[in-house]
Amino acid sequence: METEALLERLAVTPRRLAQLVADASDVALDAAPAGAWSAREVLAHLRDLELLVWRTGFARILVEEEPELPAFDQAAWALRRWRGRDRKEQLLGDFALQRQALLNAAAQLDAEHWERRGRITGGREVSLRGWLEAVAAHDDEHFAQLERLLGYTHAEAMERRRRWAEEWRP
Image (cartoon, rainbow, N blue to C red; front, side, top):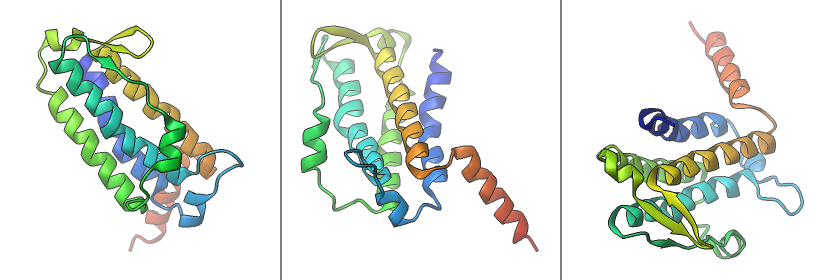
């Protein structure tokens, strides 16, 4: 993927998430199929991984020679995570802040930076570009999961808001 397209793809995620969940009630955000995460937990996962995994790995690949990037234990995270900042607005705001910090750094990179490498636990090598492509794929995976959990798509949410705005236009 071209650098500009990749950065744009990463940049739109916070806005798309906010648009998707803007009208979701706390009940809808907390509903979850048995044994699965709720939409609120998915948002918390996105927020926490942005700092704990994606930004940290990005920084390490930039400054270390082929750093070992540890696997993230999602099960342990889900059991032990701090829930003190789990209001929808906090989750979205914190995620957007972390994503913008990643994008600010990525925008400063020279061509050779994009090919720097790290090693994911287990030995798989990844370039910095590949790392950010994995971030984008992770965004897409959880965005689709949120749509399923909430029972509507981003397009449906936007259409509903468009109709509402037309109805209330003077």
